Image (tube, rainbow, N blue to C red; front, side, top):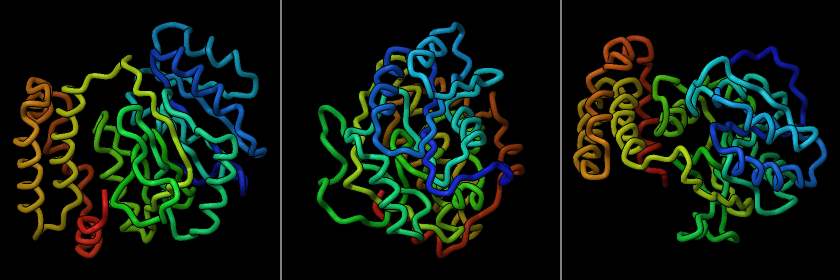
Length: 290
């Protein structure tokens, strides 16, 4: 991601990638447009939906910015594409089926980031219908190992320092890998329990076994490129253990296709991205809450 964008101090860019979920997107935009904070931009990235449904949905909300990727990039690629067009000091990342529950949510985000200047990423308090919130809403902020993609806020400097998501991951596990780079760059990842997000978990374009297969393969990819050399065997063992533990939850055909490098040759991937984090970073991340 380049650093030559006209960055506006205090502005919050709200970035929403979308693919096929026009009705879900309408709900998200309805809540997002109602945010009371003044200096915000709302950017929807249509990730190559093969019709005009996403564009039609965005047109219903004057002021929202519509972008379309040149081809279907996948969720990770769409996030990178959108972030490159954001002009805010802070970037609020939402899924097209997640939204802030409180009308002053964006204002609370800015206050939180100002009060925690070493925070590179704020992990917001996500609520699922059957599980409730991640943390009690009145609990104290704490350092975390990573964050969830459907509700987080980036400080611009953290993106510049850590770099973009790795698009070869395609989906799943990209936040954990990027978190290592963010921590290694000297930033913290902190919970923001008072900023509440509802995640509707749309069934459209959601395939649990396929997603778990990517989660397992990307665990291995992450260890291969980020683990310090002397800890590489340990990291690979942990990735293998994860895959065995979740073998009945995943699409094994997708797992072995990815593992064998049919889409992304593993050796090429490692050569391109191998840049281990410091040993201190690696152990710090292991000790933090996920």
